[in-house]
Image 1 (cartoon, rainbow, N blue to C red):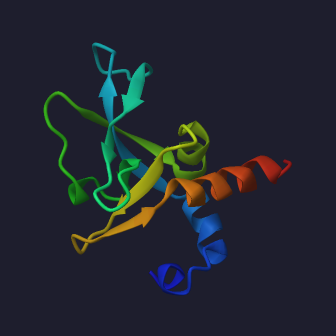
Image 2: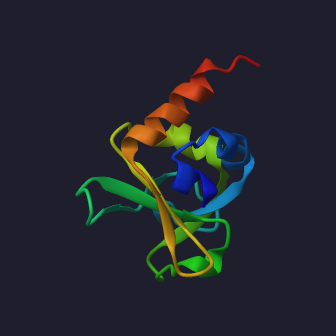
Image 3: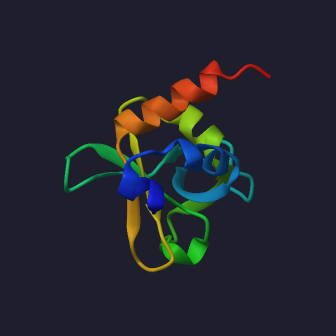
Length: 116
C-alpha cells in the first residue's frame, strides 16, 4: 500500500516476484492435474482494460464450480501474461490493488533484464 501512495513500486518488486498467489483460471483439463488453462480475465471498470485477479489467500475471492485456481509465484505470473493484461491483487480487507498493463510491462522488462 505504501508503494501505491508514493507510486514507487521498486521496493515491492522483489517481494511480489517471490510471493505465491492464487489465480483464477478456466481449465481445459479433466481430472486433478491442471496444465491446459487460461487465466480468467475481466475488464476493469476504471480503464476498460483486461485484468486478472490474484490473491495470496484463496478466501479473498470466490471460485465457482466451473472454475479452478492455481498457485504460482508472482514473477512467473507476470511472465505468463499477455502484454495488454493488468493484475488486480485482492486484499484481505476486501480492497484491491490494481497494477495496470503498463506497470505489469515494466515488471516483465525487469524480469527479462535479470540474468541468473
